[in-house]
Each structure stands twice: as structure tokens, then as C-alpha cells.
Image (cartoon, rainbow, N blue to C red; front, side, top):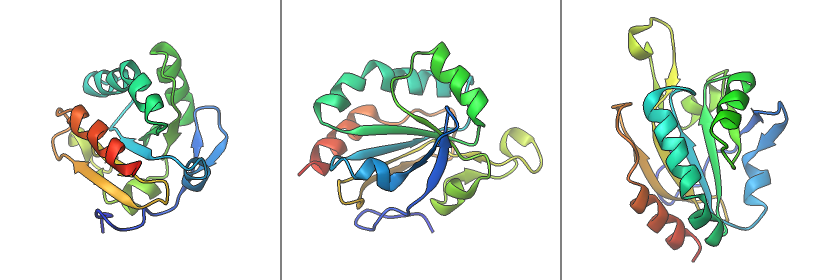
Amino acid sequence: MRPQVGQKAPEFTLYDADRQLRSLQEFLAAGAPVVLAFFPGAFTGVCTKEMCTFRDEFGRLRELNAQLLGISVDGPFANKAFAEQHNLPFPLLCDYERRVVRLYDVYHEDFAGLKGYVAAKRSVFVLDPSGTVRYVWVTENPGIEPPYEEVFRAVEQARQ
């Protein structure tokens, strides 16, 4: 079941693009809001636009003392190349076992008509410093980008 506003976000540990294990708790320990941005796949058109928009607006998140984590089912090698090519200043986490997309109930079965291929649904969760979900946005349509201004407002409110 998808985490709802007011619930604790499920804990997870995933590899980052440098093949280091990173836990949600590690990021929450900083005492600041955390934004989880699930995206279907590195190097795809809309995903590139989304991650580059977050890159371009990353200063706003830093001003709010928030951490952004990009999460996809891609492996660390693809995510590293993606992050380097687009100068992404935030961690990309690798859910190649599809555990976290299932835990958060944000996954497409048979994505893009590929039988058996599971990818993340484009979705955003904003967590307050205690790990409580303060905002949820999920789309069934992988061609739709998140409402960025809504996300930034949610981050502002999660600080309080």
C-alpha cells in the first residue's frame, strides 16, 4: 500500500551511483526534509527533463535545507553515467531489485509494453525531518512531469 500523508515513510537502503549503500535514515538524520523523486529510467526524454529541472532548481532546495534523492530501477552504472552527463548534484539511488518501488507502490508492470519489465512510476514524496510523509504525487502517465512549484511548497511546509 502506498504511503499516505501523515504516515511514516518506509525505511529502505539502496546503492547509489557510486555503489555505496545509502539508507533513507541516513538522509533523515540531517534533520531536514527529504524529497524522494522516483523516475522510470535514466536517459529517457521526460526523465532527463525532470532530473535536469530539479538540478536547475536545486539551489531552492538547498535554501530550504532539503535533500533530493532520485530513485529509479536502473543500475549504478547507468545512473552514474546519467548523473555525470547531466551534472546532477543529488544522489541517484538504484532500485534494480524493484523492492522500494513495490514498497512505495509506485511501479509499472510490463512497462512500455515489455512483458515482465517493472519500472518506477514518476512520483514524488516529500518527507519532513522525522520521516513523516507530508506530500505525495504519483502519475500513471510516464510522460507527465511533477508539479514542481507544488513540490517546493510542500518542502517549505515540511520544514515547519
